[in-house]
Amino acid sequence: MDGTDQDPSGAAATIDPERWVDEHGDALYRFALIRLRDPERAEDIVQETFAAALHARAHFAGRSTERTWLIGILKRKIIDQYRKRWREVPATELAAGAEEDLAVQSMFDERGHWLQQYGPNSWSNPSSAIQEEDFFRTLHGCMGALPGRLADAFTLREIDSIPSDEVCQILGITPTNLWAMLHRARVRLRMCMEKNWFGREGSKP
Image (cartoon, rainbow, N blue to C red; front, side):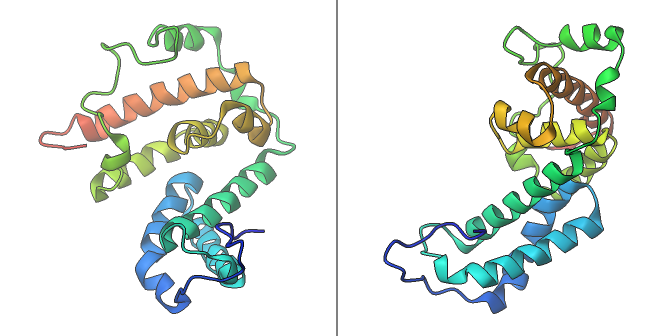
């Protein structure tokens, strides 16, 4: 079922679906856009989310906010789209050259963290920075420049904190593939964000 937050007693918290679009529409659209990188698909999946939430509203027990509940439904729908997109598609972008792999690996320590000299300047709190309009537009553009599977891998693991084994299952890749893809995505995003956001005079992540 799309609507979690079920109330064991069967009693539903009071919610008002007529307010959803005005109060939560922009937040849900932004959430979907950064993950799907396609305005039309983002709009469609937000509408599907509202429809699913309307159908499941009796199961909303009020243990979370309406927005958190709606985003939970939206997140599952996005993951379903990832599964469908990559179910039978070869991971062609994994065939990048060995030279790129070596260059990427040299920028991280053994735990996969940026070495200090290579880490994105001033990106101390990307989760809060993403709320800023200019930063969001820049990040959206940089994410859109990534190959599809790299962008999805980065989104699932680094933005949504999905466990690695689940990310591998969703994208149809191996753990080794995932490690390489995440590192390539980080390097490409770092270069793009350094150029288009962090390198701008007066920018604030």
